[in-house]
Amino acid sequence: MFCPQCWNPLTKVIDSRINENGTNIRRRRECEKCGRRFTTFEQIELVNINVIKSDNELERYDRQKLEESILIACNKRNVERELITHMLNKLENSWWWIKEISTKEIGKEVLNELKNIDQVAYIRYASVHLKFEDIKDFLEFIQKEFF
Ligand SMILES: [Zn+2]
Image (cartoon, rainbow, N blue to C red; front, side, top):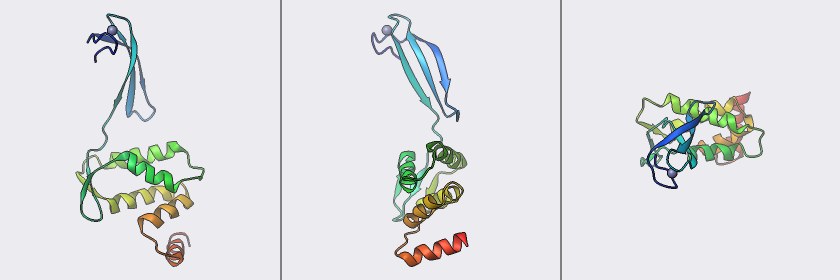
């Protein structure tokens, strides 16, 4: 790691902090030559998989994209961001051994998790993921899931 100021490659770590999930670490470094301090960030790559879309196209798994779709379902609900982070970590950890997963499968797993987190978010996510067309689809789903 080069010093951003003088490009000297010798820097020493003066502080390390691991986040609570143990998935990333921040290191405070100091240049041994000019004394400039800077921070580096290391993150575990939890998954390295392809996602099979509904049109059979392959796409690299993108955590941010999945997170956004979940956040939309949770909009204005009282769902802590941390719960979503935990959910994503849990799902990704369960995928470490696979190479491909379909969007359908991901959706199903997200729904399983969301069900225990927030019912409204669960129904919203289901309505997008299971492609509800009208109120009848909503009612059938709710009937089936909750009664
Ligand atoms: Zn330096």
